[in-house]
Length: 148
Image 1 (tube, one colour):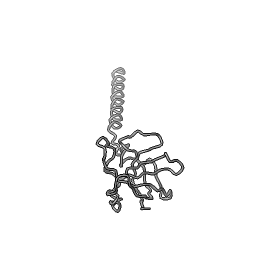
Image 2 (image 1 turned 60 degrees about the horizontal axis):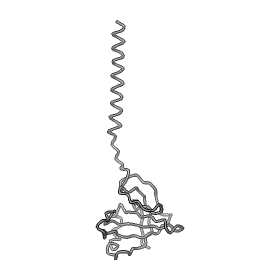
Image 3 (image 1 turned 60 degrees about the vertical axis):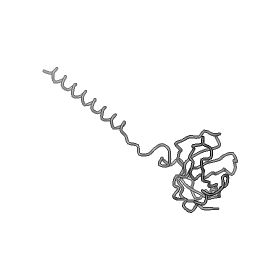
Image 4 (image 1 turned 180 degrees about the vertical axis):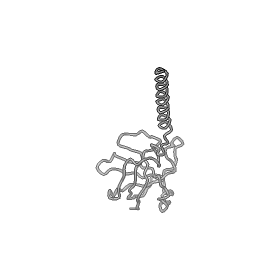
């Protein structure tokens, strides 16, 4: 009789362990991660505060080269670090509705830009462009922007 009861107990424990393992793996596999790892809806990588008083150049990037499919028809801010003229940060603006008073920038001739003081949250781009290490590409969600 003891063998039957022990056998039933071992079987119940085995079923319980299998069920728990299945439940845990199902939950972890179906974890719905609402935050993408890149793009405008991804987590903030860094913040440029207003107190940094950064001045950059605002342009509207159009597709001129048929082979260039890198974030065209978007507003970009380019910032060159003061102590490193080869350290260039290209930031593609996520919240373009923030730029309603800058629509005239779309009409500027190619190669022209306007100076702006800006702040915002930097995020990873999904499409990567490999360049020299002192040049970066990222998204920015603006928190403030002013013409200079």
